[in-house]
Picture 1: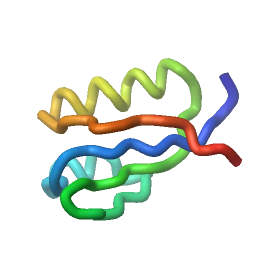
Picture 2: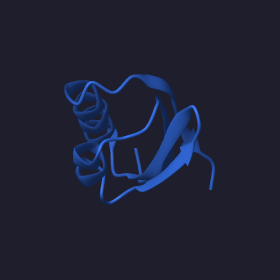
Picture 3: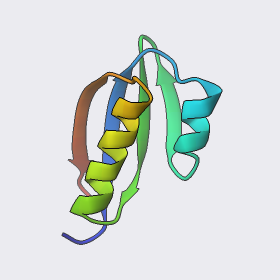
Picture 4: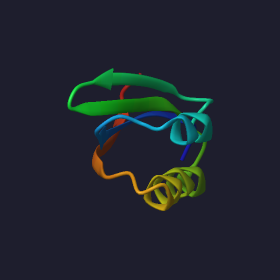
Length: 68
């Protein structure tokens, strides 16, 4: 898997802690959701992002690659 651009749609707004955890990604509020998007290096990085979202108690609504 080469570097891909991914979009994660999550419920609600992110706390400052959550924003800091994803500081290298773009965060856009689209009420009632928040969109987190950015480069995902490989499958391991993708799984790490999902685990981090879960650890922060963030509900993922959707996650998908964005075509170049």
